[in-house]
Image (cartoon, rainbow, N blue to C red; front, top):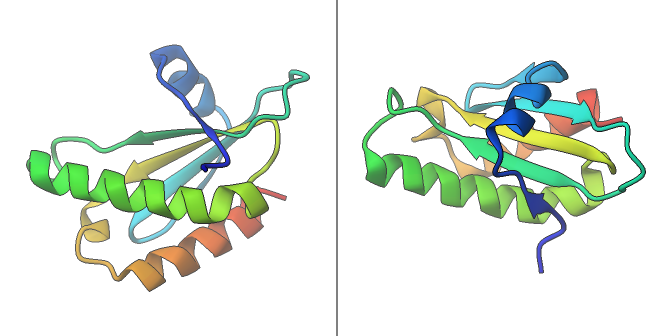
Length: 111
């Protein structure tokens, strides 16, 4: 069971862009408090075509979903939108390094 719901509307992605951001070598994390009474954690993932072809982008998406499933329920900010933006160097980055980056990013802007 995952500890988040999925963001699908473009307006929610654009609104999250006005929130806090933390850049790592593999991804950029945006976190925006929704200021509503809903304590649900929401996740959005975006990876541009500049990163690679569909196979590479889908692989990154799967890795980000696994990372979020593992981390967001415990370390994510309740009532906030979390956006992961994939970067070029995230393709070959080790999963343990991505996990360490996620812990650091959530610690910096999640609390």
